[in-house]
Image (cartoon, rainbow, N blue to C red; front, side, top):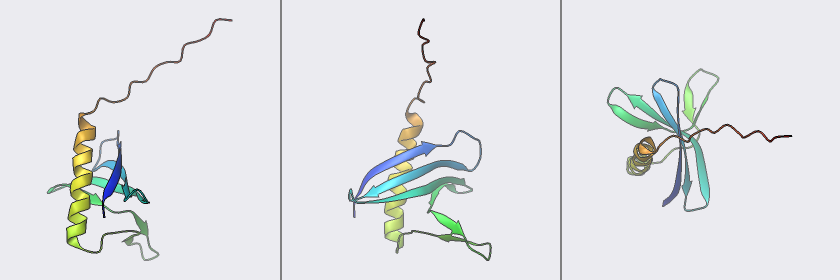
Length: 99
């Protein structure tokens, strides 16, 4: 399994969730809505989840073993750190055409 693309959307609001990430595996399978969370022990990832009828959150997709989770987490957190170094996109006002 190779992660062939990582897309990081940084959060602009203050809070524990720092980014939402999508990864592509082997150029064939995409997992959206992986969250980068700033916890008590540092950054970690939370896999996409859904709230169940009992109020608990359950992962929709997740790695089967800790080795795979660690590999995915390292790649995502490295990509997040790179995204922090990038300049934010500048917003330009569209020029008005003279009539």
